[in-house]
Length: 93
Picture 1 (cartoon, helix red, strand yellow):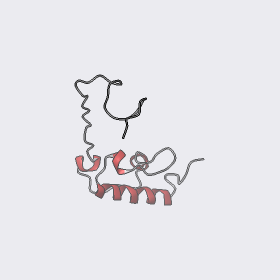
Picture 2 (cartoon, helix red, strand yellow):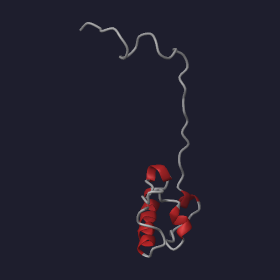
Picture 3 (cartoon, rainbow, N blue to C red):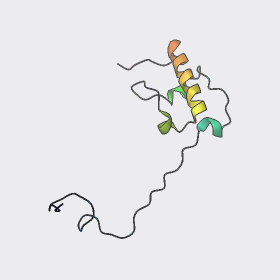
Picture 4 (cartoon, rainbow, N blue to C red):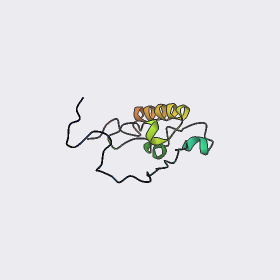
């Protein structure tokens, strides 16, 4: 195949200069509940449960909140219970 000129593609000259590559160290998220050794997430504590809800009233996913799988299930359960007794809203207006 003949190589076409122009932008794009791999290799070649242009773009960023070759040299040291930047290495980004992403800090590993630690489960807040495991660190504090909490076994139970109280659904009646609206302030604590509210931390795991986005402004559109969605439950924060595990990859963003940093909770472990076990505690994410407990957070989910606590949010749903708090919604049922109207401590936190189902949706926003």
